[in-house]
Length: 81
Image 1 (cartoon, rainbow, N blue to C red):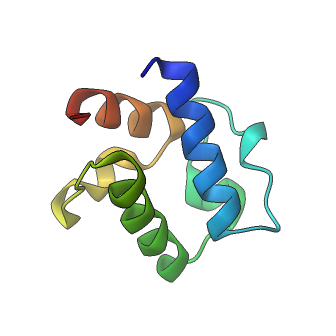
Image 2 (image 1 turned 90 degrees about the vertical axis):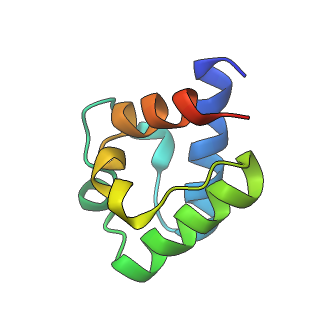
């Protein structure tokens, strides 16, 4: 999966978790939770949805590596099955 397709998948999942947001407007260095106003429960749901859709398990110790869109995409690319 190329980066643009991965980005589209991430945005689609974010939109499902937080329907009142516009994840497609995120810039690479934007902190996802801050810009979209996602609380910790929705953030956890998003992590679970990523695992279900992409098959990438993100352990709690790695959550900090997924704070911005660029960091999240880098993390996912490095762990895609």
